[in-house]
Amino acid sequence: MPKPPAPIPRRTSLPPQDPMRYEPTAVRPVRGKARRMEHHMDIQPHWHSWGQLVFSITGAVRVSAQGESGDSTYIVPPSRAVWIPAGVVHAVTAIEQADLRTLYLHESAVQALGTEADWAVCRVLDVTPLLRELVLQMAVEPDPAPAAADQARERAIGALILDELRRARSVQLGLPMPREGRLRRLCEAMLDQPLRHADIEGWAAEAATSPRTLSRWFSEELGTSYGQWRQQLLLAKALSMAARKQPMRLIAAELGYASPSAFSAMVTRAVGMPPSRFFAEA
Image (tube, one colour):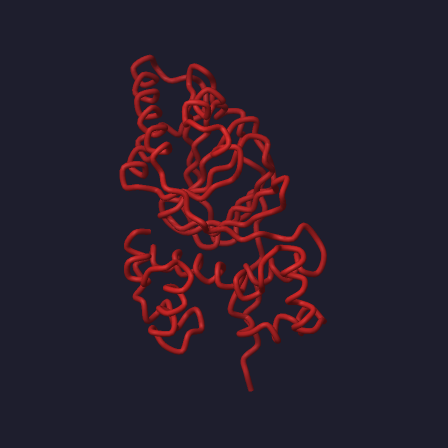
């Protein structure tokens, strides 16, 4: 008799951490903030009047954003970051214990990044070793303003961070999310426990519908197929595991593939390169 699925851990939902105390200004255009998040801790939906870059030094987080063209969810391992423009409602969930880092960018800093259209929407970016170290060096204390020497150092590091962001490679790694209804609840369940069901039949039964109807929901509401959506989810989870240096055979088994070669074939089809290269570049 198959084992019942493990219960979804109860979440701890917290408000944003005094964001106005970290508000970027024309004098301090790039500000840093650090927050330790325990497994399944949520930061409630909120928005800022400035741009924001979110990534974790250790552990993976899930960033959900509400855009004009629809909602999206990004699973972010330490090798990736999510850019969130000003005014976009977003929330953060820790998939595992995570050392979260946030950069807040003043309007002048965003303008310095280059083409406005590139920074007007959410994007997933590569985090280079240099960008990671620069963020680690950025002061994370709230107001009051630091001494003149420390403020000069902050501006110098901020300028280098902006240069790295201009050079950062965008990555097509995000999951469109329905705004409401049964498909929204189902997609959230898949994000929480992607391996609870091995196929569309299991998820359709959970949603009290047929596989054909579920396929139509994905096509009509998200503009993608069930298979493509789930593939992106598994790729994101694989990246998170690879960031923790887990071996390929373990990642393949954890994601429900019969063999490492079957998993390798999926990754190669999805991203155009074998997982060894994909994870190495990540």
